[in-house]
Length: 273
Image 1 (cartoon, rainbow, N blue to C red):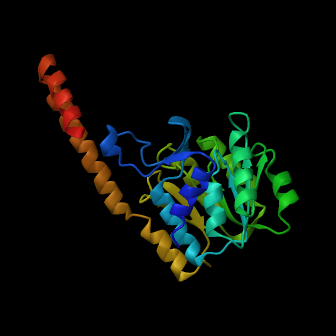
Image 2 (cartoon, rainbow, N blue to C red):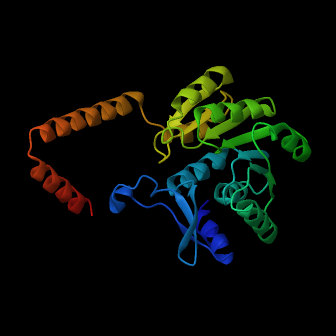
């Protein structure tokens, strides 16, 4: 199921170009290079959409897991919302968004849904206050899949989860974007502890997404989640080695003359380019 080319073409039909999936090393270690941005006539409009690797994760996940009711908190310009609908043609996708740039993203996503005949509805509103009302007005049964990609703070992540938790089926799967990148591990671990579900951090996604899932998922779904996770000991070893390398680097700099440090930094910059 290769949805990515169609996703690109959908936005091109609307007059936009997409930047996504770039290697940070090619762009001065720009952290957000892997993530998706939308352009109009060469000018960037919005950024922060899920990355190409994360699209691949969802393609794998929805091969075996088939949710009927999908709820998204945080729509931006609709990149992930449209993706969810393309990957789940028999499902209903509902997104709640605060609205930015004059509700540009809400209008664009609903326009795409109409023209592409996708089962999508984006509603303007705020989490947690508008979650229960929005879900009740649009879903006749509980939620099967939740994607939380709203305001990236520990407090808001907990508010988003708490707002939707009691509206979901017991076998619902939850995915949280940017858990590692935006330092939301603390709240993710707290959410996991009260969720009654298995929890993993998907370190093999550029944003370090978090996922909660029940024991009852299929073997194929579990294998997909494991494939995008990483062994705890490997992560710890890698982090430790990076800390040691940084300490060595800082120690060396202390003993070098200032002109040497400037030259060294320039040389590193040239090598990266």
